[in-house]
Image 1 (spheres, rainbow, N blue to C red):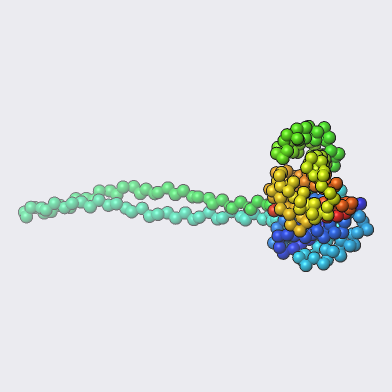
Image 2 (image 1 turned 90 degrees about the vertical axis):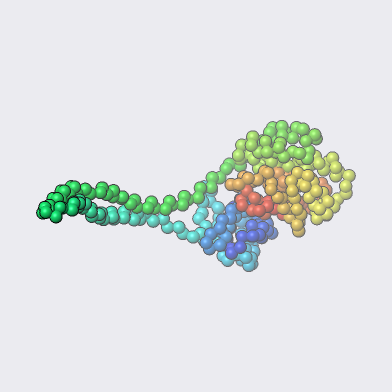
Length: 319
């Protein structure tokens, strides 16, 4: 088994994760994690899948037939190494700082001289009129000028680089925590989401998905034994429509479309890759494993809202 990274560039984002995930699923690969971002060139998709090394050529051929992809690359995943997307726009950060603006020139405003004009009194006819000497002008005064120094505009802050992806060590399920969360399942079902959220917070980060999957398997098996044990064997589409989708609708909002379950507003899936879709996969495994004909069950997580998708989508097929 190997892990491969699919890097793809597309012009439209809608439905991209579902289509590329479906192509990978048809080649026998399972989704590990995914990420899609918007770029001036278009939508950049990075998807990590796990599968057989011998099917790498078939995966490349399947991606080449996808008309939605402008271009793509397929690389092997190296642990601890984060590969930059081949189609990402290069962002050059300049250290140039513009010089300060020159100081404005100071201009002295002229001061008006005030001269006092003596009022002349009319002189008697027989006396020679006298002219009063003008009063001395007041000393000149100048207004003070405040020179404002204009600061140079600060350079635009550089966009911080994306946080590196840290691989979390995968651990086995915390059986004791699962037992405690489902201790009162018979009385709590179907209002078990608070118990699942408490389980999500309690277990170690590496044991989250395995613990949620184990909890889903136990809830699904318990529900099948209680309500559907008397049913006969059915085909997968019939069992999914009659048992799987209605059972999930008691826990979350679900829509069945062409063999795919669209889970809307999943409380277990938060931003930043904090996915809880392993519970829904385990729930369907425990619920449908004994309800369908002898062929096995394959559940592929196509996309998850924790990686930016609108809905969590599970593709269910025969193995």
